Image 1: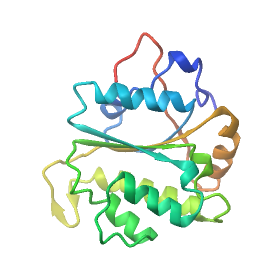
Image 2 (image 1 turned 30 degrees about the vertical axis):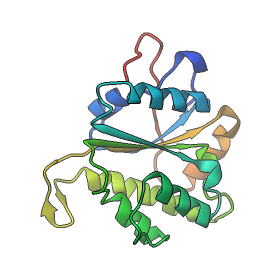
Image 3 (image 1 turned 120 degrees about the vertical axis):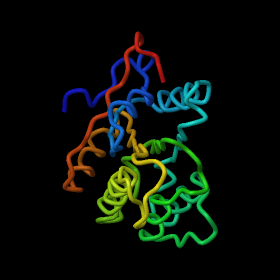
Length: 193
């Protein structure tokens, strides 16, 4: 897949501001690059004018290899409420709510995503379905049967893998029946967040 692979790791960035501008409806993206690019992206966002508007969350795929660690990572990083039920329906409900986190855009980056739900059978497919459904839900002008103040809240999920795990992520994503969208990375001359 052209463009899936990240070039020079020191000369590329995830341009989240452009992602949200060009894709306001949100989506599930895949990208292959070193973890350092993820950390640099978070640092850049936290030191920018979009920091107060955009919320970026980084989850660790290596902590999400089994169901309990998977749910614990989401619960901890996104600070889910105490009523979170640690199952797929509860995850779907919380991702489609997020009323406790005020933002005009949400970006969830899952580092080492090829390791998510390893050996869990259809778990990865269900996981991607929940994420894709959340992206679609946030793009709707009506949420939970009522109009909400923001007619289109960008909600993006980025599944990051290293070049060593790229083939595994592609294989797992192919099993979802969804088209893999590749996140374009900015070159050094395009260093905006």
